[in-house]
Length: 125
Image (cartoon, rainbow, N blue to C red; front, side, top):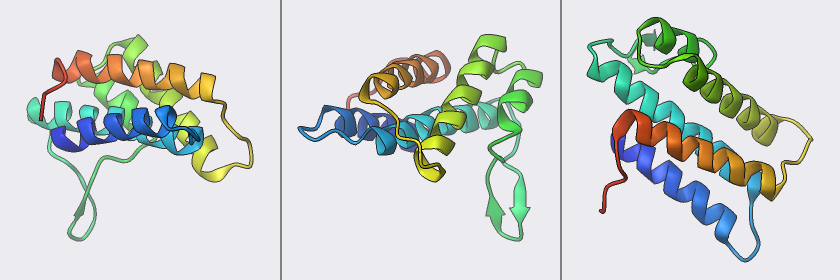
């Protein structure tokens, strides 16, 4: 999950920095960067990835911020950041509302800080 974290963060940045920015797609990638970082951190402290149906393993999106808080991986602020990024992803992916480049730029910065908090500095691939 660590590599997927960094790939999603890089994709979010590219989608915003493009000549024709794609803020909705960037918001989705920013959330998934944070989600995968949290998933990695949960596994790193020995919390196994749950099986959501036979042979399919991942953490459910809605309860993850609270579960990570209860596990001591996230503090209240970080849990709120993950929840906010998830809400923004829902808007980006499923609602008719359009996110602005400015809103998403802030979200990408929050996601990057969240990821660095859990995984350390960005690797050079």
